[in-house]
Length: 113
Length: 109
Image 1 (cartoon, rainbow over the protein chains, first blue to last red):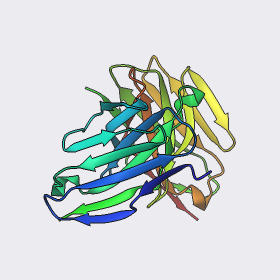
Image 2: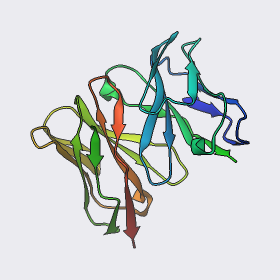
Image 3: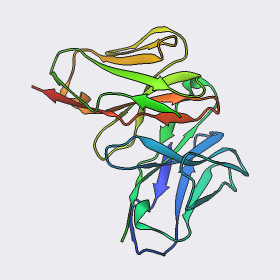
């Protein structure tokens, strides 16, 4: 099992460019999440999904969109990147119960210049 | 508002015991989780407490007091590989995790 994978691992964007981050999980988890982590801070939830075809806003959703067309995939889009979106982005997945343990991907380091 | 407080940094000696505290104030509460994150890595799950008391998993233990909105992570027999950041996170009423800012654990030989 690969667990949770994220592509790409690194990316540099210019202000105003767009991109999509892809998250895939092979654990048949219902729930998936996108977080951002800034230096010296904890994780902040951007968007999440409780099942295929459903998405919901988290704590910091502005400037991001998501889609979950297939259960195993969760996409995060930046339509017009801004320097404030420079961060490390983590995707995670979990199943209800079982200590609500979230399994994380390796992260995507995004720099917006 | 929702907030979690934990020390920004803790230093301990290899082989010793260290306790990392976490106090929280959230609109809903189902449980308290702890995650470990090494530099450049992803968070990994350590423990989850839904009820008051102590949960033990090997060298790591986690405690929760719901009445005091307080919990801690206890690490025993510290090893150099335990050098990492430790995050407490509250599972709120929407089953989302609200994260603390993390505690950087520095271990000296």
